[in-house]
Image 1: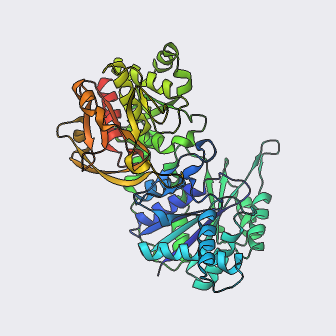
Image 2: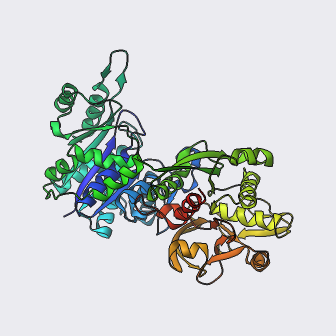
Image 3: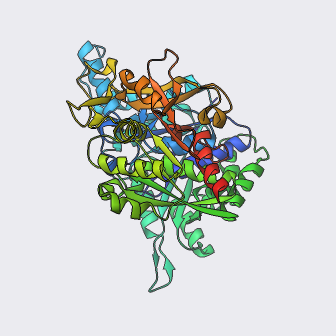
Length: 533
């Protein structure tokens, strides 16, 4: 029978519940247990696909085409597992499905209410994931902070679910903040006590308390938390700020959190195999080399907008015992070419990531032009590939005025056009080309050599593509289309083989990178830099 762990947060938001959930998943995996993780988000959006990256950060895409919360990326990276649509549930989707059922008459004329209809729908999502994956452990993270109105139906659904499956089959892990007052030199436990009291008022007693803190928790404060929050002393877990998020599983294991959870759930406490993870953390903390990579995008004010790109660059560095410093480059500041050259003068490589809309595009084109003309290792992702094609068309192929129809409805040369299947789409949410598709790589190309195989599967999220009418012309001018869809109708990868590393792809390789298994295209970029050094 699957065992369930519910993760909630209190005191303040952004405590790192997702990292705690992912780390716990890694501890189970290290004991050879199967595990899945779900994220329940209280917002009314059906999914984050239509939300601004400035507000919500990155939209993570799964193999089955779900547009999900960025925490799904952490879950996949920590557990080395691919998740899907059932792993991210929002209030919007719950209410949408309840209303659809009401309109169909599924409730047989009953008055539709939060309890039981909304809470039943939430519980059905837990069960659906269990049936699909059949895991030993299922971790469910509830977004937001205890006390928020939005999350109340989820909290009530958890209370019901725990009582329905019986004692010993589910536990609650509550994450809180212990603020440090420098004037008195004290860590204060009262906010955590209040947070637990609020959770109790909803009918849930947490079995484990994870305390975010900047200082070690004294024995007296740990005992006070255990006493007032009614948790065992060994279930008060300290989680201090660390150099890298990948250190968190080791810190939790050192305090026996994995063993505590397994004991509470009546499961065998197998000996964990964390050797490879320890080696990874050792590489991260003791790099032998360093390099600086620029990320030239339009959402640079919020680093979470590109979190998978950042992590993928770091993963590639870890493999070579190199630390990767990120330089954020606002593409709007690169519209002037002289300013662009100055901003790129101190970096070893540049990545142009995905995005939507015309803002900052001319700056991205200047970044790519500089990289091409100065043999600066370059990787383009999604929109970054489209911009690479536009730049090459304008400045090498002589197609002055070349552009994408996303930015100009009537360009002189529409080298980027709307995909055929997108031309009659009216809405925005969940209507793009989403999820995993095959790509066939050209034998002997840089991309094929990086992957070590000719057929790969990668995740997509886009509406526009390279206009096939211009492929032959661009190819004659030296741009190599080294990756195509199986039917040859969609350009997937372009490259300039004479340069050290100038590769761009229509898909999002950052979604499949792992800390101990860097993605081949990011590894190719970093390897090219280190070879030059």
